[in-house]
Image 1 (cartoon, rainbow, N blue to C red):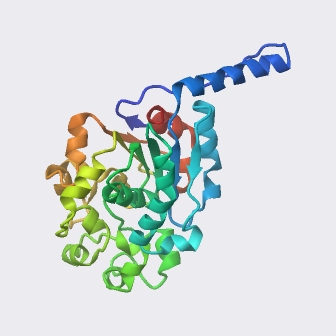
Image 2 (tube, rainbow, N blue to C red):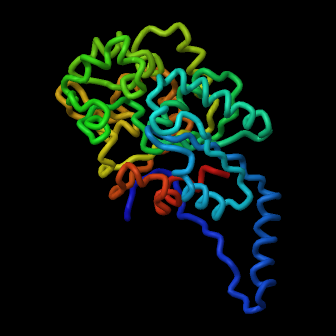
Amino acid sequence: MKGSHSAVSSPRRWRRSSSSSGAAGLLYPLLGACLWAAVVGYKPVIIVHGLFDSSGDFINLQRFINESHPGTNVTVIDLFDRSASLQPMWKQVEGFKAAIYPIMQNAADGVHFICYSQGGLVCRGILSTLSDHNVQSFISLSSPQAGQYGDTDYLKYLFPQFVKSNLYHLCYTAIGQRISICNYWNDPHHRDLYVNSSDYLALLNSERANPNSTEWKKNFLKIKKLVLIGGPDDGVITPWQSSQFGFYDDNETVVEMQHQDLYLRDVFGLKTLAARGDLILCSVPGVEHVYWHSNETVFHMCMEKWLV
């Protein structure tokens, strides 16, 4: 599997000794790894799940982290699981924030975020509104950062009577805004309704007047790296470029991040991050949406380097 990315080196792997001395041959490398972890002091990693997920879905990702960075404290936040992930995004932001804050307080050197799918937008809400966060790397794993607009299996399951072209009738109402997916539903054909109705994404993106926008930008820019991971075979995030802040114009032609107004005006810091050299895009073909967090190639290509 090949992918494109910037500034991501080839992965390092820990290998066990093949010594024939039995237990000692296994013990010494483990001791060495533990000593190395103690010296290096890998920062804690916090994982936030997506729509309809739960903490148990991230066993493989936890294993990848602990194999490559032994001794890392990895926490998958066990909140808003399964159907509870449909609750409003701001409610989820406050809940996850309360669970995560003590971990931050106990990590003098900071923490890393890996936030998957809808969780990537939850994490943006946390990073924007928490003035004293200490997140170093924010890894956004196939998250609809610029919004969602597509006829997917998720949409058919949640709203069987709707298709993408008419979901705005529900999403851009007070009732619709109580459902997480409607908080970031971005219909390019009804831009004014989106801007005026979206209680979440339009505020995060400062597409609607937001008195907190300056403070939120300052908070967000405290991160050291923003890593945006996605790929053309995702099948759920629509368009897939939304995972890297690209999105449709009103003709449903994808406009890449660098040409988006929110980047050009640097409304919450993307252009600043790019100028700092701290905005990393990692695109990997051949990965379907539900497999991003269990794909070892994706981990080594796109995440491993940023979790030290």
